[in-house]
Image 1 (cartoon, rainbow over the protein chains, first blue to last red):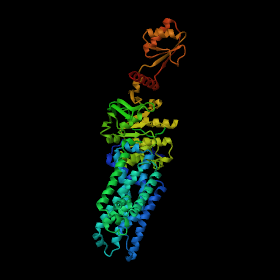
Image 2 (cartoon, each protein chain N blue to C red; image 1 turned 180 degrees about the horizontal axis):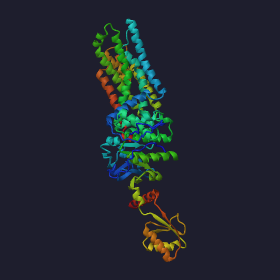
Image 3 (tube, chains in turn green, purple; image 1 turned 135 degrees about the vertical axis):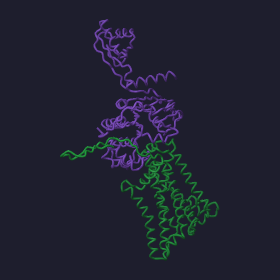
Image 4 (tube, rainbow over the protein chains, first blue to last red; image 1 turned 90 degrees about the horizontal axis):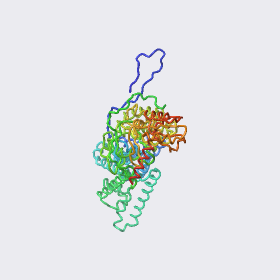
Length: 302
Length: 331
C-alpha cells in the first residue's frame, strides 16, 4: 500500500489524502497447518462466547465458577482447619462430572450446529483444509476446552493438597505421580465427552435439539445403567451395565488409578479391569470420530 | 459508487496460461446428469458462466473447488489438479457461494480475518488483510459491527471480501447478485468488474442474468442441461455476423426472394417483423451495397435499413437452441 506523504504541507492545509489502493499479498502462506490452528482457536473462542454478546458468556462463566469456587473454599478451609481434609480425586471427579457434562452439552452444539445452520461449511471447505481436518480441528478444540473443566480444577486440587501439607515441596515431589494421573484422567474425560458431544451435535443444525439430546441422553442412560446394576445384581453379566454410565465408568478408572472410590457401590460391584475400561472409552472415541467423518463426508455437502 | 480506492491497475493479461482446464468432466447425482462430458479451457479473464437454473453452473464450480468428486474426467485450476491437489487449489482460489453463508453473531472484520487465516495467512497479516479488503468493498466503517445487522447488499460484500482476502489467483463467484435490489446489484457488478480490471484477479462469474454477464465479462461459457454449449470471448461473439432489418415499400416477399437469389440469407417469418420488413442475417458492407443496388435496380423504395447488433441474449438463445436441436436429433 502506497501513501502520498508530502514533506511540506502547503499553508492552510489541514488534511491529507491517502491512496489506499489494493496491494497484492506477498507474505507467508502457511497452508493447511495454519488453517487448522485457526479453526481450533476460532471454535474455542466462539464456544466460550468470546467476541460475542455478553449473554453468550454467562453459561461458561457460571460453569467455571461452579467448578472452581468450591475447590478454592475447600483449599481455604483445609488451610485453616488442618483436620478438615480434602475430597478424594474420584469424589471430586464425580462431583464436577455433571458440570463438565453440561459444558459439553452447550459447547459442542455451538461448535458444529452453528456452522451447519448458518451454512458456513461451504466456505470452510473451500479453504486450505480437507473435510477430515475440519472434523479433527473441532475435536481438538472441544477436547482442549473441556480439559479446562475436567483437568484444570483437579490440578488445582492436587496443588491445594500439597500446599496445605507440612512440607509442600516434599509433598509435591512425593505425589508427582498423582499429578500425571490427574492429567491423564482429565484429558481422557475431555476427549470422550467432547467427541461424544460433537457426534450427537453433527446430526442436527439446531443447538437446542442437540443440547436436549445430550443432556437427556446422559441422564437417562446413566439412570438406566444404575437401576440395571441394582435390580440385576444376582446376574454376573449385569456388572457390565456400568459401561452405560459414563460417569461411573470414569469414577471406576479414577479408582483404579487412585484407589480412593471405596464408597462407590456401582464401581465396587462391577469390579472390571482398567484395560477393559480404557479399551471401552477409546472405542467410544473411535466410534465418535468415524461417525463424524461419515457425517462430514462429501455426500453431506450443504 | 461503492469503492473509493482501487487504484493499482492490473488489466487484461492475455499471455497468462488458462486458469481452468477441464477434460471430459461428468458429474451425476443418482440418475441426474449435472455435468455431461464437459471439456473447456478458461483464460485468465473475467469469465461469465451462463446458464439457466439447473444448467450445471454450481456443480461445475463445486467440482472445480474439489468439493464435489466427478464421476469421470479431470480438471486443473490455476495449475493444480482438483482431485489430487484440492487443498492447493483452494489455497489459491476464492469462492463466494450463492446462498447465505455468514455467521450472524460475528463482526465482519473477525470473520473475514478468520477466513484469511483459513487460507493459510498468519494471524497478524490476516487481520490487516481483512481490514484492507473490507475497505475495498466499501465496508470500512461497518467492519466491527455484527453481520446480523447488515443488509443483503452488505452481506454480499462481506462474502465477496472473504473470497478475495487471501489474494487468490482466481475467484469463483456463484450468482453474486442474487436477491439484490437494483442499486445493490449495480454496486456488486462494479465491484466484480474491478476485481479483474484493477486487482488482476481472474474471475469466474456464474449467473443466469445475461445483462450482468454482458456488463462484467470478457469471455463467456454457456452451459445447458449439463452440457457445454459454447465457450468463447464476448468480443469474438460480437464480431460474428449481425443482422440488418430492411423495410421496403410494397411487397417485401418479392424483394426478399431477389436477395436470396443473390446468395443472401433472408428471413421474413420473424414474429417481430411487420409485413413490409425482413431480416438479413449479415451486416457487412457488401450486403448493404447489395440491398441498395437491388432497390435501385428493382425500383423499390427503401424505407429503412437498421443494423441489429447481436446481444448476448441472441447468442445464448441461438446456441442453446442449436444445442438442444442437436441433442434431440442424436436421441
